[in-house]
Length: 387
Image (cartoon, rainbow, N blue to C red; front, side, top):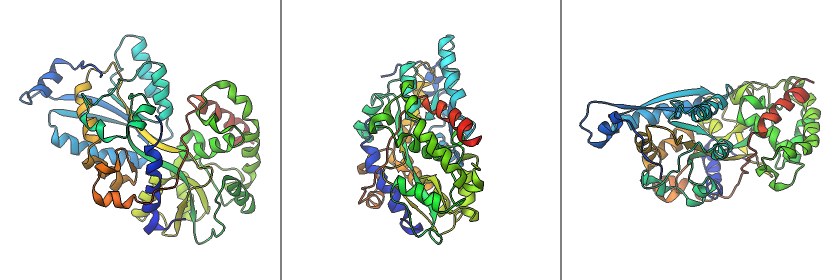
């Protein structure tokens, strides 16, 4: 249980677990890119397209980092394309894949941000560039185990986890386990909410965690559709919980939707992303009585990744950008502005940051079920939301 002053210390407790997660492209830059980057004397500027999605804090992070990079590298322009949370990043992935299949390069997408499931899917579709220290020296700053988990096809530049956020003035019996969460929900009708899982990761985590509660532990890494036959008990649970939810079955849109309900006092407890809660506490957008805690077994969490389409023609410029993102300077922005866990090893951070991460012991789980989340969302809409 955390208050505002100790919240940062709490969230940092996840970083060691993140660092333990088990997870040399050729240059094809155009002539303009080579001229701009090779000598630094050409007036031509290479521009690459970077597609990313998430809540507003993700957009705010890149609006801080990109100008910092461009100031240091005036020969490179980052064309940032933000896809708001809830609108879905799938069309971006589909565009990259369709471009490859039709012989049209990377579809004018040179850098893409998403989660582990997309990294794995892209590996099967042979979409991602293999990244190495030959082009990105600061990859040496990243824990090798984390890179091995994704076969060096993606860069884990930050991490966060879904937690329980609650009003400490009204919640005295704080759940410590998943079963206790369900018991609390039933004992406090309409005081709990989670967002529509198709519109944000916090709600998706609650739904997926509830479904996989009844499956073997290693099922959270199974992408085989045959496992869907084992979902029935989880969906029965979610359907039963519906009548105890906010508004007797109202599911807000996006991660921010439930945070707004917590802020207004309409509910007392929600699943939420740790970085969003801590950021809004820091800005005074959430009441100081808001605290966060992790449960056992934990909700999902882990790195967010950056992938380079292997058919991009702007790789040299992208490599420079990625090297900057993995610098201690940029990672300090991740910690300070977003309250995220660093993507690089703590030993590469300032002593102040290292000290703030001491005593890390809490963990979270890394779910990797591939495209099965689409089927979860579809079934949830028909069996839970529609009841």
